[in-house]
Image (cartoon, rainbow, N blue to C red; front, side):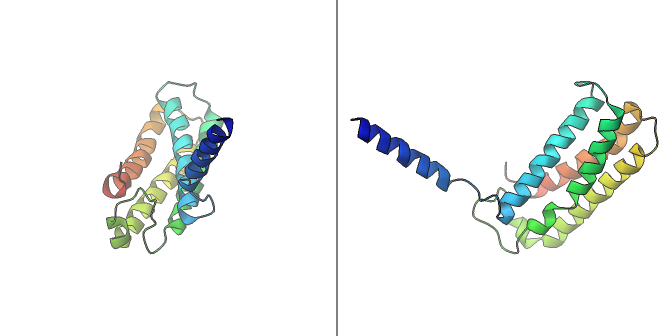
Length: 147
């Protein structure tokens, strides 16, 4: 009986591992970048919305990090759709639109970096450029992501 339970547990773990995404694949690499972008922007948004204390130095560092991250995922979109992707098929059919949305996000994060380069930083003054970054993310998700 113990051997059967052990065998079933091992089979379950094996099946779970089959469903995971290879972190070195294009999908795994861009998912990791998008998750890092999300964590960074959530922390920044928390500071601006008063959920966590505003730390001027940390916010500025995260703005620079977000700007750097915003330029990286696009190289990990292959020409053909991967099996496990949570993107709509249209993404691969409308690459020019994806590129345009990517450039818009990059421009918005660059604007945020300019805004944080002029201390002292005030959360009220950073709300507008940060909202433009969030809107650029949202625009791409609305067009191409399957929820």
